[in-house]
Image (cartoon, rainbow, N blue to C red):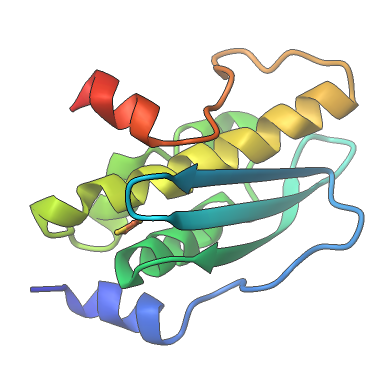
Length: 144
Ligand code: FES
């Protein structure tokens, strides 16, 4: 049911933890299943994501997608990080079962929430970044 890559990232999640004094931190939940994801970013003066850590209180797919999402944004620019959509994360994991697609949205939205926090702290606008939601269900109902 799950790809080998999903199982690998679930069993050995990358970049788990916290960053002290992060450049940005974002938390997103899914009220329906009760899962929560928090993403920490360390962004340098050139706008490059030097470090990223996450904590997920959630299902296996949420852990695997957050782990893969951190791998995809690490070392990248903010613009490149915005291209890490839930679909990009799923592709990198060789897919997710249809009932688990919504879990990957948590990863995308948590990155956006952390970038939003970074932008607010620095009084900047990140082009193409929409205000993230606290509860991903709002988006799922809109989009799916
Ligand atoms: Fe809640 Fe996967 S079941 S995020």
